[in-house]
Image (cartoon, helix red, strand yellow):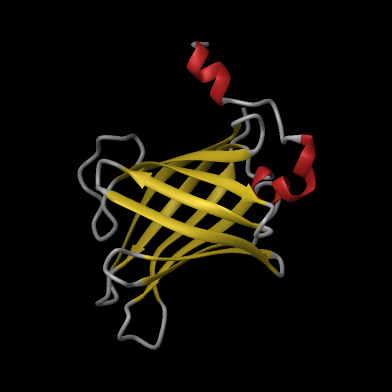
Length: 173
């Protein structure tokens, strides 16, 4: 392992906030995913992908990589486009919430959100550069499964619109 990788990765959560860090820490590992993109006209397209979560930065954050479709390099996934991006999820004890940053340089998509537990779910909220509200939710969370919903709400709209729906199953290896 290179020095960079060794310094970035961590073996587990930092003890200082270990309980709070488990909100996303429970996802650490490898996941197979089925992704459905939903167009504004009601059309849908489905493909497979993969998601990988790991502890980073002395166990003070969780980072993940989303690759859609799998394998990377396939033709553009209709509606949602191809994803080869990473999320850095950092617990902020001053907010008792998570600061979320998504980076997808291939599509020039960058998002900032705040994530919090909401009952049995996790809800992340933010705003795009165009002023649309974003809501990304982890639902139906179990040890081996989660359902992720990506929604937008344009400034002029009253309702949320589902854009991407991901069903992920933990890999066994």
